[in-house]
Amino acid sequence: MLEELAAGQVTLATVWFLGVSMGLTACTVTCLPFMGTWALGRASGQREALLHTGVFLGGRVITYTLLATVAGAAGLGLAKALGGTWGNAVIGGASILAGIWLLAKPAGKTCGAVAPAPTLAPVRLHRKTDSLPPLFLGAALSLTPCMPLASLLALAANAGNAAQGAAYGLAFGLGAAMTPILVLVPLAGRMGRELRSGRAWLSRWLLWGSAAVLIVLGVRRLLLAV
Image (tube, rainbow, N blue to C red; front, side, top):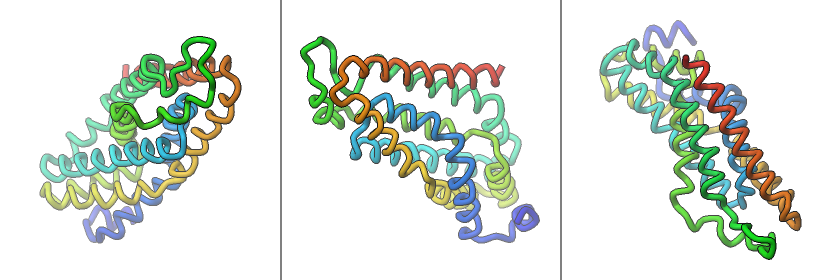
């Protein structure tokens, strides 16, 4: 595989399978702590969880396409720089933003002792801007250095043109979107809803705890970038 990638003797289907290999393994391990915590903290319903997961994966597909386009047009050096120290800084910033977003714009308004838990359900999709943190997380986490991404960028750079690089990046991103987080993130959201159901006192702790985890994950990434 690596020899074929270096020689550029691969098809889009090969690149897609390379993306699938990452989506089923490294993507799940890397992305679930971020998106799972987000869905748990929001106690997402099924529709919102699927929407945010789709937006998250869309951010990844777009970023892989852009990275491969850059590699095809400008060579491997610039694309590698985007996925190195600078990439960790972007991931850290996106995670901290998501944590702050949870605190500033909670999914369910439970301020006051009289707010019943069932009112959480109808307010899931009222704010389209709530999809921005998953989008930013998806785009940022695409910059995580790994062997499949390095192989993609090497192939795009070897292609020597932006259009071919973009095609490789899109195929890779669509393959990487085949990931277990499509199931695991909605399950995390459902777990959050079950925990909060009838436990108004727990809602605040779950929200704060999830926000704290996202902020800590972000700070850790920022420290790696230093």
